[in-house]
Length: 176
Ligand SMILES: [Zn+2]
Image 1: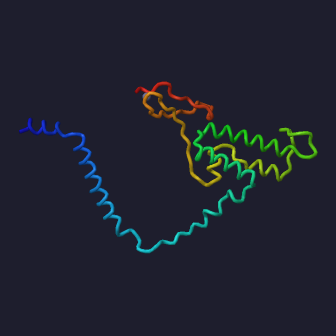
Image 2 (image 1 turned 90 degrees about the vertical axis):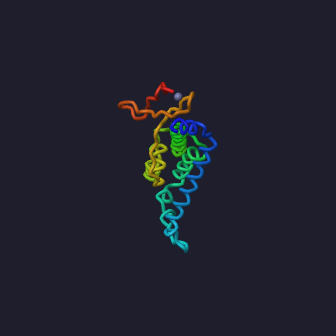
Image 3 (image 1 turned 90 degrees about the horizontal axis):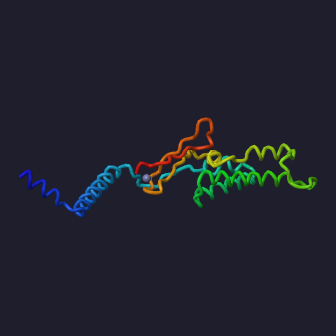
């Protein structure tokens, strides 16, 4: 009896197991729907979303709004990594800084320019890096760097070097 039962268990094909799993998921879905049904309102709910339109960014200088837009597009839309975005933002900030220094009275752009108080305010409000951008957008974000194994695609977490928060130690082996 025991032997027969073991043999029949071995004969269960992958298809049978998939069918059983799908059946379990359907039952689970039906149970969850039945549980949540009393909580679903019959009429539309009014939600005050005005706070979404009065963010800190709308009061920022347009130059800094463009810097924020650049960072968000590079990271969220194009999919560039954190170091790539930080590099591009650093270059964009440098270009903006030099552009602001090139007034009609100067011979050209220079980093030694003495800015007006209004310009210093714009510079102080500039987002310094990608985490800073998300902070200005009131988005609670944390960035963790990972190294992807070329063999198995497993992601291994990188750790910041002691005393050098900007530099990371990436695992050399994956144990796969
Ligand atoms: Zn691996």
